[in-house]
Image 1 (tube, rainbow, N blue to C red):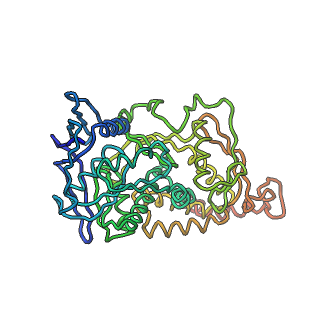
Image 2 (spheres, rainbow, N blue to C red; image 1 turned 60 degrees about the vertical axis):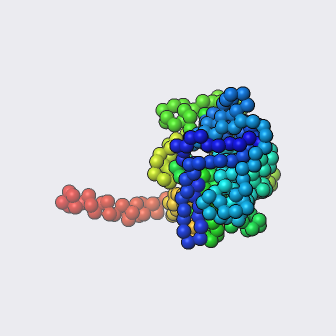
Image 3 (tube, rainbow, N blue to C red; image 1 turned 120 degrees about the horizontal axis):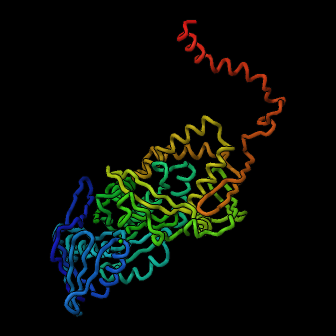
Length: 466
């Protein structure tokens, strides 16, 4: 194992530590750790694809990794050199016993492992949440984590919990951020952070860590969840396309997307076919909904995660759910992102359409107004805020009658509603018909219009001196 040493640092490799009754924001400018050259090549190549980092060979066996954050690391030789005895004593910045680190297997989070050991003299337990990012993202993680110096890797399958307890409540609420964003990353972070708190308790850790930068939204989402679920827990943080994938969506940022005038390249998309290349024949799909939550596709009842996964396949095939937007980040700046949410787009369309049958005008208007605030809370990382929980209780109550079937037509990027039925429908053909009936007499409209328009009539009379 080669000795790796930071040879330059103008970086924003920031780590924050949350300790009981105080917050510390730490910045690492000197990093020294041990790692294999082969591992760095693998990690560097993987990170280069997603983060834009470069990996270069240098003087034969030497390896240079130029990190996106400004740290340069040089490795040479194949002999094992253990540079960490810090776990036995106090580290450079203090002492922690055990830290649970949110771990992706990429270069950034792999670098944090030895940094934590050196600076806090602690054991590091790497934690990876399976929220539907794909099997390929999970392969070889244990080997990478241990090669980085971690004592253990914990992987938890959170897919069903993610869809059932986080995605479906947002769907029921109709929560959309700034008219377009279906909150894919925003919903995933609290379920991951919640699991980290649980793992910390299981392994006896006294701290948790994540690798999000202060420039984005995710730092807030992680840390607010930690504050809400365990305020006494200590915490640490670090910071071509940047992508985030889970069962709900795939987001793309960076590279040419940083200029909002640039059209996204077709080879960027991974979950959806180009609408131009989608099938020439439309496909019809029927969504079954009970009390505002989807339960079936084309008559087949499925678990939440299975249902969403199935709709992702169907929607992706037809180019459904592509969104290109400029959004306002929580920290104040604007950012441009492209999102793929095929199954989610189908479900949002179906749920909203069914509400046209089951909700009256006043209820729908109040629900829509609260949905905006609900989305803002989720986007801002306030999932466990009592306000969102109270709003969720309201959403659950008013959608008790939102039960029925919605039939949709998928064709070359578009989702069209072609039919909807509900046993709780407020739509009555005998009332809505233009023919006179016993329930609604058109003659009643004349008196209603005179009363409804009275304020406008009085104002016009005043202006004309009548």
